[in-house]
Image (cartoon, rainbow, N blue to C red; front, side, top):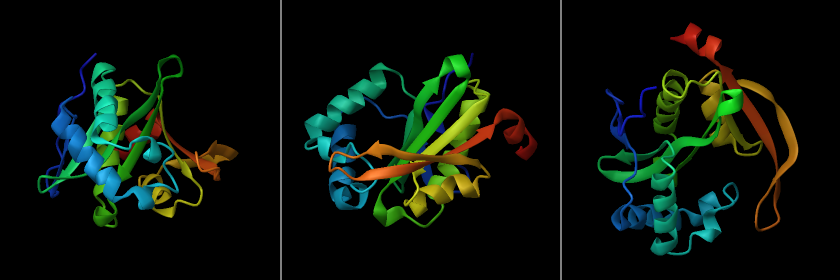
Length: 186
C-alpha cells in the first residue's frame, strides 16, 4: 500500500499542508497557536487545557511522529494556522475519522474545507477506507459546516457523548461518506 505524502498539494490555494516534524520548533509553533486560541478552542476541544507548555506540545508531536499518525499542519504564508488529519483508524471496519482545528484568525476562508477534502481523498486512496467519518459537537456550527459542504451524510447524533474536562457535555453529530459516494463525486 502507498504511503501518505509528507506534503499535500493544494494548488490554487494560498496555504500548504505538511506532516509535522518531531522537533521542538514545531511544538513551540503549535503551542503558540493553541495558547493564542485557548478560549476559542476550549468549548469544543477537551485537550486544550492539558497543553500548558511547549514541552507538553512536544510530547504530543513526538507521539504523532512515533505512531506515524496521518496528521497535517496547515500553513498560510508560512504561518501555522491549524491541523487536520486522521484521528481514528479502525482497520477492521475500514473506517477512518478526520479531525481538525483552525486558528480563529483563519476561520471563514474555506481553508479547512479544502484541507479536509484532501485528507478524505487520502483516506480512500491510500488508507483503504470504505467509510470516512467526521464527528463534531452539534453546537459547533463552524465545524459542522465542513462535512456539510463536502456532502457528508449526517448519520445521527450521539446524545451526551462527549464530556469536557470543565464538565460541559456535548451531543456529537456523526457525519460519514462511503467510498462509493466519494467515487461518484470524483
